[in-house]
Length: 387
Image (cartoon, rainbow, N blue to C red):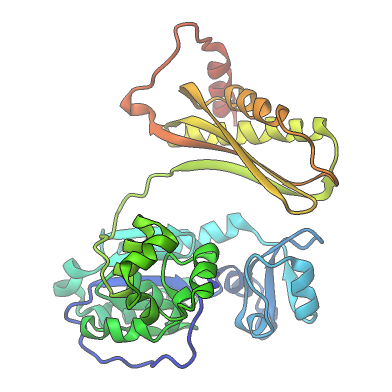
């Protein structure tokens, strides 16, 4: 569920020349909520909010009826209930959503092998090599939407453009259940009229800085001297966002996106004041991370923790290992050592997480210490087989 600003005044027709627009961004509309309606047709026509249903939960998806009343992804469920008390609040079923996602991605894979899945409900396609077989990018986009609707029963919006960043913004403005082509020659005009927050890469912190400086639209950003942007955002971000504001984005559709980290975090039903309870969670989370590392054939060099207090103050800490690991015992030992150095927050812990970063493929060869005991790793792999 995207919270990126969409300008209702933006034109819906920028021309029909798709000769230089091979990039498609497919984004499933209110994906989790649409899946719930597909499974339970009695929900159709009602505002739907998917997410944690306890007082500590947060919204992960909502239909447009709920969004019209101010419901947004990441919002506390309690706030969503206050804004939209008539909505159906559903806890969510991620195994079900993955099943539907697999069906959607299977359809996209029949269009072209140049497929880059970027989340459970969105993907980029480069259809340059599919034109002779399937037709123009616009025709292919219509074909995709029809196939997904007929085979999976869900709506999908598609943005068509010359670059990934413009295609992604276009799909946001195609919603709900639409298609928007931005011809290459119209990209700059399309971009410059949009709020700066619509630009892919402008998050909360960057958006706040630009807002403070009176840089309200992508056009404002494009015409801001690069020297000023560098002082505000840093060299790399300034040049990257300045290029995007002029429609310059050389990133190709990548068919492989290796994971950079694996992690597990939990928002507790009640604030936790017991160190022992947090240590027990660390142990369980560490073994969950380790199983996912082994399943992916990777090991990690860095272990991190994230702790948020009842006052929402959040700290992160990390440590690098002398050798990479994929065992829960090693991950837990490092995470426990990081936690041991911290005081429990006044009021207790609201959220805690464990993360493994600095991943490398085990097939590339793995460094080991001379005194390494292989018995724990062997026992954990045996448990994998039993599961």
